[in-house]
Length: 360
Length: 226
Image (tube, rainbow over all chains, first blue to last red; front, side, top):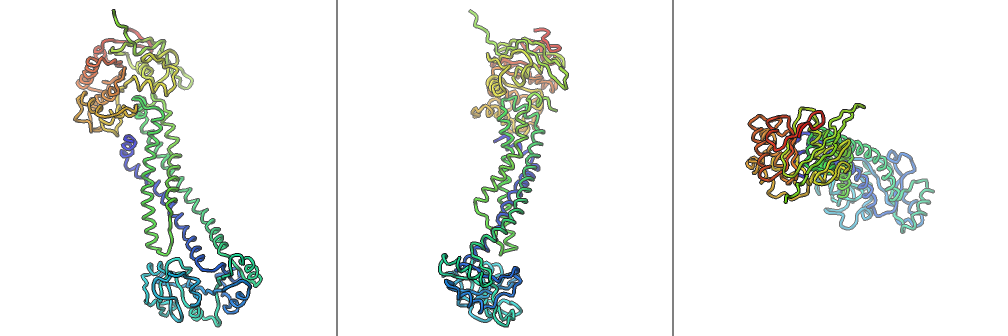
């Protein structure tokens, strides 16, 4: 390892550029993969509700829909056999502490479906009037504290509780309050969570909901829906990762190729003093391997730095990178390096030592 | 009773023809040469007479077009590259004319490399060899921090550190001024005298050649006089 290390240290600028190229590939791979965890986080938060399905208006444009008449729809849904409870939610985008969030307007008596025991870290659930509960993530990002007044829709709302991160919404308000703010004549719901009597009843309830002209989506389907979004995103990520990997491959190819051309005479000397072809091949691969190793380490540091920066400027984003992804990134970099170094290393090993010694 | 003289290097009818673009250029034309253990042989001739080609073939860095190369009793003309490498490692030490050292390594590491490539323990031997060539103090220096003569002495130390049966030197004084050349030749003579090292030295310089115990003259790919 002495000679490869000495060789790469002798060309500091070139080595640094090559290491950075590998590092950028590694960091891009990890950060992009990490960003996809946002969709999983949304799905997990939705699935944290103690219910079995979501019921939306049948409109194709759910987000633009004015929702459903809350009381009428709830009565009809709860009249379906095996439906235990229909939980209305009125959502509306709202800027809280400089960050736009979907406010969850819920009835105080439905809080237990959104929060397991111990979820409320400080304070209490919303009851009525200008009250709000925020989750720990938003509280930290917006420097919000219990009892603090936050201006929403031009009026002050008091934070009466702080819930542990992982609940369905980041901001909860009383259902009636949100309806009042939005000036709906009679209460409306954006959608319902539906709790049924056991998973076996889900299929029949679905049919009955559909028969009412509504759109039921089980949590499994919701997951699949997000996964298909993830699938589209994966194409983009795949393209970026491919480009990053290809650039890494090209940089290593160019670096090692230049190295071999530059050291043609040295290769002849090495053969002359006893190096076998395999040893010359190994020496060249070892140099590429050291560059790759440096790139992986710097790539991990760039990933850490990039993630820190993202979360600093977008604290509500989720960038979770499981340990196994670091292994995948290292393997990707190693594969790119090996492929990039293979041809020049083979060329070096196959060179005629006499030709090398005559090289000027 | 005389003990039999051991031949360390032998060539029989050694021929090398280089082909470039369909043009055949003979470099060696049937060279027969036998070198006994302990000899100091100078091979002399003008540029292009085939002396370097002979050295490459003898050092198993190249293969002949025709003829036989026998190193320490092993025929090598049809041996695979791996087998020739093994023979070279076991029996041969090389000193080239110029740019002989690996520029990124220190003098000591250059010497140690010859041992490492053979999988041999390094220990204090590189330092001892550098001490033997008078360069122990400069063992941490890189080639660009050494004079050309010092570089050649490091190269000689590297060639000898593996205790080869045969030292092949390709114009080792070709790039040196007369004073440094004298110093390097003195070292080679000392190695021959003290250790009984077999040496084959290529040169085109009459004065250098006269310091060997045997002189082989070449011209046009043939041995002219031995």
